[in-house]
Amino acid sequence: MDHPLQAGVADALAPLFGILVALYLVCTAVLGAIGLYYGLLAVQRLVRDGADAPRQAMPAERPPVTVQVPVYNEQHVVDRLLSALGDLAWPSGKLQVQVIDDSTDRTTRVVERELAALRECGIDVEHVRREERAGYKAGALACGLETATGAFVAVFDADFVPPPDFLATTIPYFTAPEVGCVQTRWRHLNESYSWFTRAQALALDAHFAVEQWVRARTGSLLSFNATSCVWRRSTLRAAGGWSDRTVAEDLDLTARALADGWGFVYTEDYAVPCEIPVSLSGFLDQQTRWARGSAQNLRLHWARLLRSPAPSGWGRLHSLLHVLHYLFYPVLLLWLLAHVVVTLTAPVPRWVLVAGFLGATPGPLLFFATGQLFTGRPGRRARLAAVVPLSLVGVGVAWRMSRAVLAGLVRRGGRFVRTPKFRIEAAARSWRGRAYDRPLGTTAPELCLGAWCAGGAGLAVASGLYRMAPSLSFFAASFWGVALLAHRQR
Image (cartoon, rainbow, N blue to C red; front, top):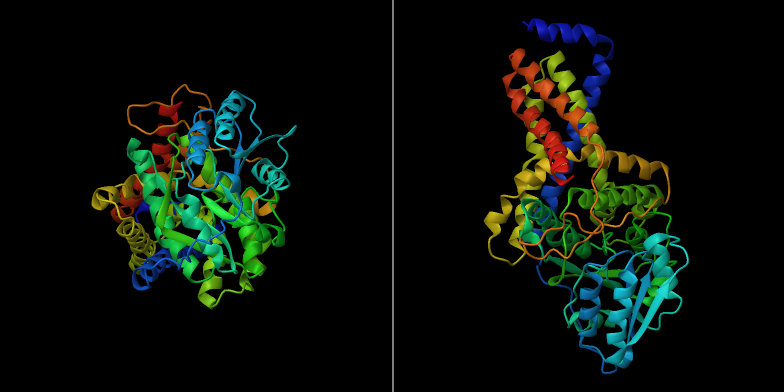
């Protein structure tokens, strides 16, 4: 017999019960399918051939290359990047360094100083200053392309540090005429800075070592990540160039190039160091931009991706699921809201709970473990422990990510919010109080969602549904943990 509290809740919500149960079951199935998909990606990575795409010998006559650096207020890191560009092992007469600088602070003076040093090395440098920040990063890259002299165009964000052999490693791939872009893996300069950066590194390692690797080898949509990559200039022109109709200009351009039949190369064995966001606000600036941009590209390209020239149905499925990725967050929110009500309204069959858990949990765990297996760095087991804080933060940001996804589904373009970087390479350094440090803002949604889950856990215990309390307590800790982290960093 139902507990009186459970029966009271059921009576109060009787008119909506059927809808809530249907919503709950659909969301459970979707979350389970997402988990199984990431497990499938891991299995494909484990069983397929592990070699990188073949790289031809360097042409005797090295082609001209333009390196584009779009900059907006990066005074902490831009000098490090420009200094590294001066060390590139490439003939100075064949290299153009182009800084498209929309900065409004002392970054411009830093750029001018570093470019003067590059000129002394005989490198052709161009410092482009725009009157307005029209089109944000996409507009900056398009503006620079008008005066670029290279047959190939490399792009770097300001916090990257390319090794001297970057061009010597990537340019030979373009010997194959169908290759339009080469994307390199990222390596993290500040992975060990905090538990927060270790959690992000775990997710990024899996993204590159599993997602990017599998997609590159199935001919599906590959994120070239808008940095640490090289484009064939004729590919940029043929695909229509840079566009600011989405805030994920890289995904938009890649989808158009893929539809035109261009190939993409991902180099698992070659990595470029960069910084991971150290603050919660910076992390969310980055993630919400990616979420909104992915949703915008889903709206723009879903039909094109289904008709893409990928060699198999799997490749087209990978392409479509790539832009569907961030829909996980609104589905998770709906599931949480329905989960509390449904489990307190009527007994949920144990098989539904077990099936949902087995669908949603082992796949992502295998995904992260596989990512660590192929990173080639020691300490894999210790790094896997970061899956706990990664899971907590991943759930705790669900509200903000869901809002970004919904905005991307209904609106094009939008403000490109730059991810602040502070040149944090050692644990002894601090980013607090430095330029670009800013608070996250209100955490009321997270506090309310945490209270909802905590209240559900309390009611579950009061109703004798003890098996529901641990998961709801975990979700409450996730939302409240994000709110606490925001408060501490404020």
